[in-house]
Length: 287
Length: 283
Image (cartoon, rainbow over all chains, first blue to last red; front, side, top):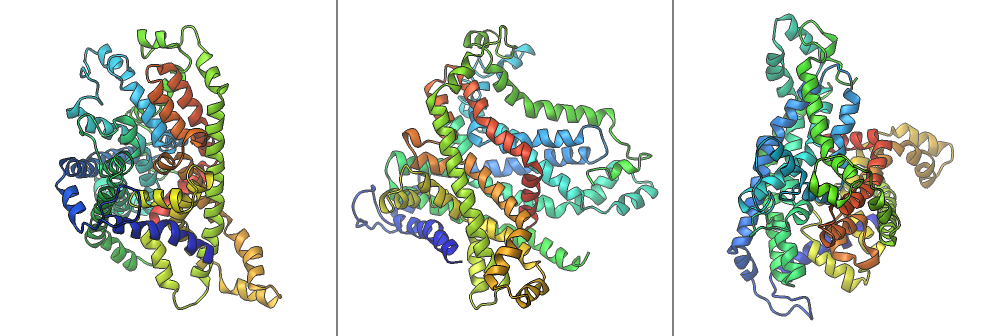
């Protein structure tokens, strides 16, 4: 117990307390903390257009994941949840992007998305389409969506694997009963499978949300937050402020804001959505 | 088990219809295409890549791969990644088990508050603490640019999920087992090493794999803490990509070789990784 607790207190709890402390000082990283500024760092972070833009980008990624990755992952999982040739192999294949680091995936996609000479634009040209002149990652209007597309490529496999696992928990008798009653495939999915998959979907949504709020690696590799701050996230903002500009106080305030946003969303989600699962689980206990 | 449930009722739901196979094929192609372009691109020259970005090697160029494999930096990065991942994994498994065991099986006053401290730790991403962590490791502990400087915080941040996965595992061991061992003259420590550790091996492998993959793929913490010949593979890949961004073929070769260890590890321990993630989600 002792060593684990010490490690945890020293490297997790202590830095978090220090982050709160740094956030109320102006500190460039040298000498003692003397320049107490109270809420001023928070004030300047929350009135900084780059930061509010970053917050909006994080929220956009959260929303896009729920609106696009969830239905897409669910559709693929439902389609694959049957006896078919090559299913085991497909499960392996679909999980490959998840195992690669975001850096490696990002670097490969960065090359594929190069304007004109990249594979993506070459394939588009082959069907008569033309990519944007500055490239997908270099055009402010497209950059965030392009980052999201790469994230979808990387993380869809995880969703599919988790959903498929959840589907195995759906009792087979239900299908047979529904089938005897003459239900179509789609009716069975909509009325039985998807509702029973609810807990898995809600937990995935929670993980996806928390991950989207902390997004850093992929953005740092693909765009560095550019072009013209079109893809900054809260994490890229605080790393830039902290390590490139030595504004440790501002960076700490941004990290506290990031934590509070994540915590509030987590608590709301817990209260509004996940609570149902706890209730359902206690009703269904002993199944 | 796997997905055969609907298939058992072929009358209505069928097995694979052509539509299903078409979708499956599309998913597989979209998933693998970028990786394949990287692998194949590494076998082409930059001139070939510029002429037809999506083409096949003609002729095959092995120079890109050879250059990476003979560069000292690549092997140094791979060594750093390996050492850091091994230290992190060992710390996580050993300390995680030592923490989860009393939290699961001893009765003491602060048990639940302590457990909750770890659970709340799940909500703190390293990102939030990254700036003070950087100051702590480099200035206070003088561990900047060292293997331990990255491994210790990584292990600390992996502890919450480890404790959360291992505790139910250990709670499930029947009390009778412990009583029997004690009657047979085993000490509590003896019971821990001879009974608990072997029986909780599946749980330990799961958390170990998660810790290893997490460390192997980590970017932010190493980015702030490591420089020069202490860099890990992700940092090396990112550097190579920015320094030689016009050498597309070289970048492809470098990234391909850098992704091999993670892929090999995954294929070997696939079942463990997937069930570990599912366990973490259901937790």
